[in-house]
Length: 155
Image (cartoon, rainbow, N blue to C red):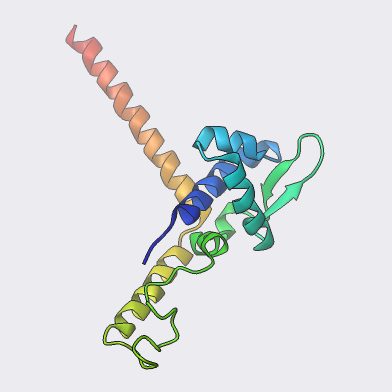
């Protein structure tokens, strides 16, 4: 199974959008610069994300994209599905015709892996990842502050 760059970049771009959309629509140029993803690639991805109903486009001055719903309601599986078309570990695309029309010996193994991954990603929202990121930043800032206090105390 492969999670391609398309799926990874779609999740990164959606997280960036969620982080910066408090002030209104976010343009793709800004996401492109912050995340170092080509603008033309983002335009393709956001077309798919819009068709999947995950983002809405705002036209005109100050236009760009906004999330179509709250970050807590958008799960990672839906983002990847919109970008990738299909995330599948089986060789047969889930049709169970791996070996001359019959399932191969490992068909159930890969089918169950697909279900496990899908379930895992459906239980993670954009908001969950944003919360984890914020928590990590706070921990890093606290650790830096503690190091600075220790250095000052030593002198």
